[in-house]
Image (tube, rainbow, N blue to C red):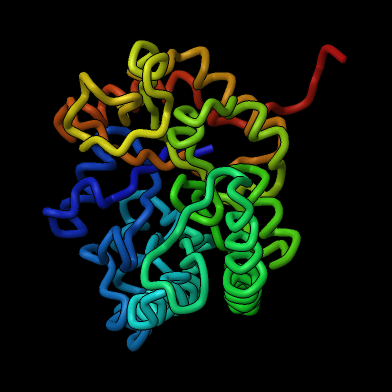
Length: 320
């Protein structure tokens, strides 16, 4: 395995400067935003698509530091009821897939998006329970008329370009847990998989190890990101929480650097489960800890991750 960093953390720096900061802390892979919510500060998509020479120079910038690009990430709203936003998201996704194919990057990371509740609605509608009865009608529309048709075409487009789609399971989206990810994969094909981010699972009460065991080879990319679940606030209000991220004392959960939400043993179990199901690629750190500076949060999180990650092949069992 390799440890990587999602370079959006250093979007205020030029690409080479961001790479130097990442390699300085001991990471050897980089995940790069290619549009949508992550932006594309480190990836001039149109320029790279248009020029073989610029693509070569871009890859050389990474390779001469002994690094690889683990994924392009373009999380956005492909199922938005606003046709302009949906078209923009689809264009960003397709360009990202085309560029990933040309660069030899194996994965494009996305969000599934969330449709409206019915034709003509103007905003997304995330359904979390089966009652009142019209909720089930909403889900039928969202899955069978919007979500499945879109992702079947999108996954086929990725497959045609030799690229995997890593959907991040995220509350508020059509795909937010293991069950919904596997349901869409069964419909859309094996090019569609999971960008496995344990932070969103932690605050939904999911055991990441159990989730990994169930997902198996559907995991195509992994985020290294932790989450602190506040037991006192959860006991009062449950896990769903829309208070601003900087209201730490009152929130049910907060994103934290690795080790500040769950201990090293938890992360060793996660890494071991990934090896058990055959995942041997990159753990890409996504730093979103509002209680620490970027540099301190990254370095302290990496210290825990370096202890947990197994970098070498296990080799033969000489004792068996």
